[in-house]
Image (tube, rainbow, N blue to C red; front, top):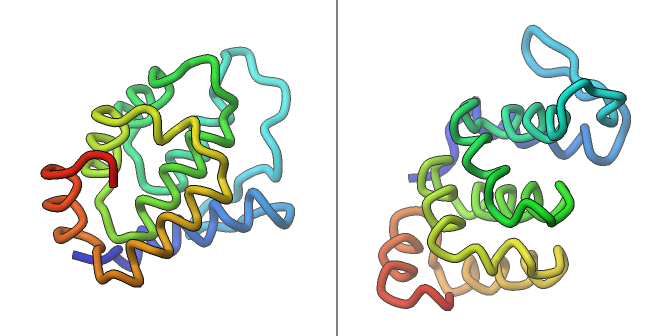
Length: 135
């Protein structure tokens, strides 16, 4: 199963948010960069929510590797979503293999491209990763 139209729009919004000022999503605008926030991680929660994660899923994702910067979690989540995984499947994979969060962004991108080239995306990727988590 690929990304829904709403998930693609959210992903485009996240990419614009990270790269080019203000991202306008249907019905709301997101700031270009997280500003001062009374709670730690609220800017990251907004970015994860823009990608399609629920509040609870974003909270669980933030709990993984708490010492890492937000860009690691966001980049890993984005690559998994772009591979066609649902937000729940992406979160489950990151919970099973938190080492993915420590990979450099460029390395994650290369691995995702290789998996796509091999035809592993969505459900096929989930089955393959359940058999071989090192993928």
